[in-house]
Length: 247
Image (tube, rainbow, N blue to C red; front, side, top):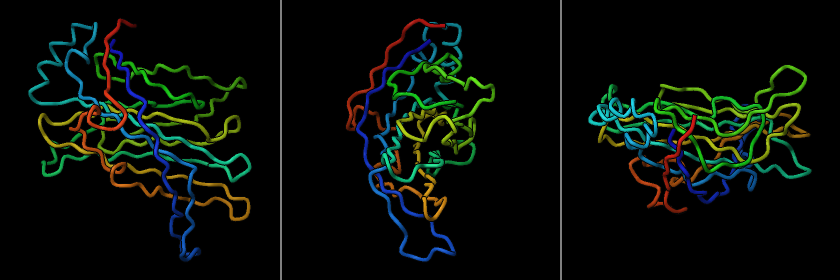
């Protein structure tokens, strides 16, 4: 197994802007200081990194190299509702992958995503595991409620598509608060430009007005990520990769 130690990149506060509704004319409400998004980490994977100790996969990944590149993209979203304020009901983080100017058969896809599901929030992690099949191995423990029925806190979808998404939902046991790290391995045509366009949305449970949907007003530096730009050229330091044995 390959273990990649990723840097803790800076978190940037982002504003949430109320989604327009027919019954709610302008001006739209803007919420500040409750959601932060990290500078994205981008790390191109070599065949050796992807294969790790599973040497039987190295030949396949090396043969793939002339045709496909595998790029790891990781980012963290932090939810910080005030102690006595209106809570988050749910949120979503979406990624739209694109190779500008390339034909449809050379557009990137999400080869693997993490998490695919999580039953409660966990502390921010800086280490992930990759299997030789380029699947992201969860390194954090999932805990399910003791009463039997699992209440999912995070659900990821869109593997093998160009638009993966994670949906986060408050449960009866856990409010929507804390840091969540989202990771995708992108399969892109070798040498082709590759970008990731991010969207963040959240629904707030207001005491007076009920459920109100918001979208994040992302600055261009957070909204569009050049997947060909290594993280050691971004703020937050170099992405250090190390291979260790594992099961």
